[in-house]
Length: 129
Image (tube, rainbow, N blue to C red; front, top):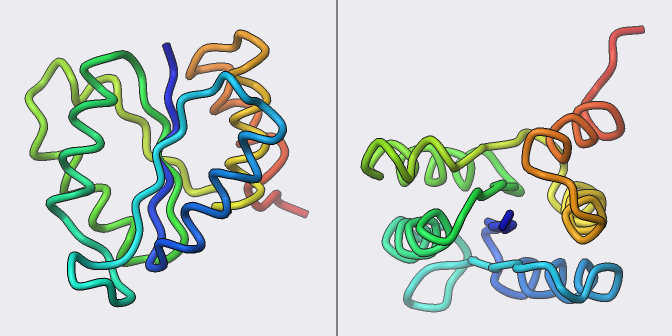
């Protein structure tokens, strides 16, 4: 199973992106993490680590984030995982909303993490011109 972990500075953005992606791919496992424990804007390492660990124990995980510090939180959480679960977590630089839609559809159609990441690379990351 491939899951999506959406990291945002805003819980509303993370949950809204999750809701939108599930409209396109209802059977996809998508976890939305956003804001701090106090309910303010920011990123929370503990909730990110817990969600990442749980998803990695079930299978592969593609992580998308909205801003640099959310990406950094995702990187730190990934590095804190034990070796085997860490190898199943893939951080992707694709845009959060667009990436979540493309990834959810790819996963729902049966693609694995490698194929999904290739699609994200092809359609969403900047291209040399």
